[in-house]
Length: 215
Length: 252
Ligand SMILES: Nc1ncnc2c1ncn2[C@@H]1O[C@H](COP(=O)(O)OP(=O)(O)OP(=O)(O)O)[C@@H](O)[C@H]1O
Ligand SMILES: [Mg+2]
Image 1: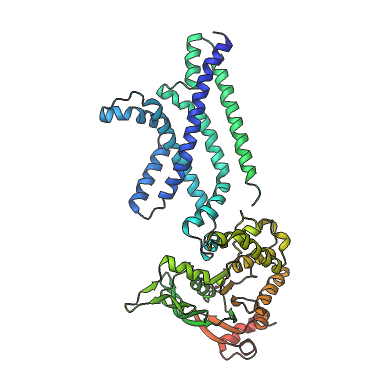
Image 2: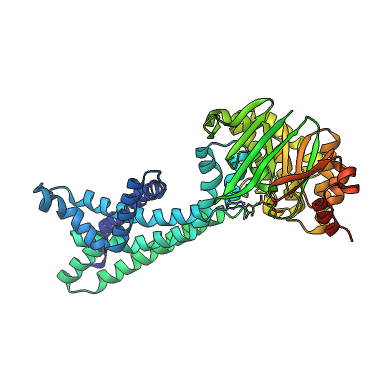
């Protein structure tokens, strides 16, 4: 196998890795906010469920969670899991990252000085206006460094998709390396992750800069 | 009467902080509230501006009841929706300014009028610029709060409260967080508002200012109003021993 066929075979894997990355963020960033808000629900039962969800998501390996989401329906209900590989993968990633993001959001929200809420209340803002107009924009700025950390971890975590034999970069690298008895696929995969992380770090830094207009 | 507080009671953790306080403010009055730390001055303002709920008594704005204690002894507030109307009658200037750091000075002044009161953006901006000129900081309209001195920030906070066109403005120690050389500029704008007959209640430790600007002075201690009257009376010839004691600390 020439280097160029190796590269073109692995390019498909790079695309799949990017797909996992994008779908996970698109799903987990908003879902994390919903989870963070539910954790402050009036109903103790809701708070309890959310607390258990977060601690399970953070307290067990993502690899195990992926296996459970994929094989769970079969072992529990004897459902056919044909075509379920990719949905299970994305579901597992989104729920896991939503839990981490929820904790980051919660920390950010709790770090806001009470004076911001009081000023908004006296001015007559409703609760949702206060949250959306006054609190949330400031929270996003405060938590941006933690979000960046999490996003960079996600780039590397996408390789866990190999657990479900999903053909992303890392799985392909392993397969090609074995069949061609070559070390090259791992080098290519390594360069890919490194460049991806570099781009992510660059993009996040730009976003942080955009919010630098106030302190 | 713009606001009437009748027999207000408030407790925190079972401890009475406001013990049967009654006072009212007429249109155009400037009332100063003085008293030692912990006497309940801030709590009183926070009850009047609905940041805290009272445990007993009555709050009226423009003759309309916002809260009262019913026959069974429970304190009832009007609905959330109605309370928003009462909130629009009063403004509050905090000791710590509490400006919105992510908004420019202009946006701090226009956001609530537009989003809460539904005013047209252009009108709100004109009003805001006029207020900033009055506060002497029109050139800071596009600045962000962190770029301003404490005195400038507090003047923005006063302008933000005025932009809502309240009937009455409450101040909780508006100069206490400022360096001494910056208190003058803030006191000057409050004095100017007093001359324009803006109805105000000012909690302050600036005794000379209170004496010069207010139409009435209230001395609070231990959750009660110990003494009140014209500033020259309260400062020049206090009747109560407790008031004399308190004022003596401020003389040198
Ligand atoms: N949210 C709260 N929870 C519990 N206790 C409180 C709360 N707010 C105020 N208190 C207590 O109520 C008392 C009166 O406080 P308040 O802030 O009204 O006093 P103050 O007259 O404004 O004092 P200062 O001049 O120091 O500002 C204090 O003993 C304070 O500890
Ligand atoms: Mg106080």
